[in-house]
Image (tube, rainbow, N blue to C red; front, side, top):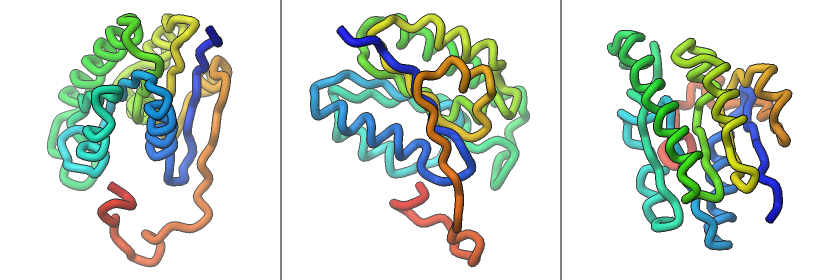
Amino acid sequence: MSSGLTIVYTGKGKGKTTAALGLALRATGYDKKICMIQFIKGSWHYGEMDSTKKLEPGFEMVAVGKGFVGIIDDKSPKEDHEKVAKEAIRISNEKIQSGKYDIVILDEINYAVNLDLISVADVLKLIKSKSDGLDLVLTGNYAKDEVIEIADLVTEMKEIKHPFQKGIKAKKGIDF
């Protein structure tokens, strides 16, 4: 059995969650079992909520977050976001330790650390606790140096140009 990898998709450019979902799509083709835990998204409706259901039973998505923190229409106190982020850590640990999955994706976990909803120590503990055969994927901008150091593969998405710069709003099927 090959050794499981720790993979990080980070950077200011688009495509971090999309890269993780692309990996999941490929893996389901090989009958791999995948679980994706979303740390920030959760209260909004977005395309992957529906599309990932088409990958079941090999793919499980757990949306834990309360939505974007401190932007757009967020009226929740930071303490509420901290509470659900800590719950996402608990669920992540449970899924990682369960032995049921070949791949666990911790979507937007790097944002949760950057927003001080959870600690980098929480993330490092999850990484260090994974079994040798499990591939662990972490997404979100602002990956901490300690996470980058321990990871096996790190890809940084770099924004060159973005439609928002022209006043073009988020587009269904492209941005959410």
